Length: 187
Image 1 (cartoon, rainbow, N blue to C red):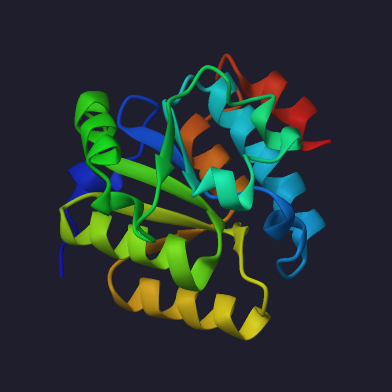
Image 2 (image 1 turned 180 degrees about the vertical axis):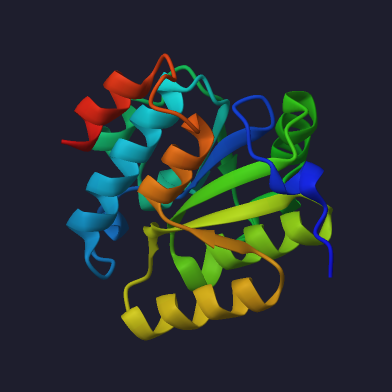
């Protein structure tokens, strides 16, 4: 079977970052929260160094709280969308931002994997977006829910990746202008 190489080729021009609901107290209650948050922070910083567009989702921020400060400090330049559906894709504002970006490949990080991340990613995939789930930047309160969600998303056509795998894939070479910046973030 031949793969569509056009959609397989990720570049800084055809890729964006979607952050799903890493907010309030829940962000610290998910499985392996510190690792997930720290890795997501590095992902955001690297994507910024690579000039990728980003979109931030917040589920009912009046009830759950805002995006945690550790991440929010790097996200102020990007659209922030309040949502009330579990699937961010059910919100017209996200559909509008995705269309405006003209990006078809989306890296996704967030919580909870089995609820909002899962529903958003499944709906985006069904709408024709190529989703790359950054698995070390995704969690749920229970590891079993996280693992099941990742497995189900993969079975639905979502690509699985990790933070370092995707960042190096986007740079392609150690001669990339952001290479040294990315290396400093990795440390």
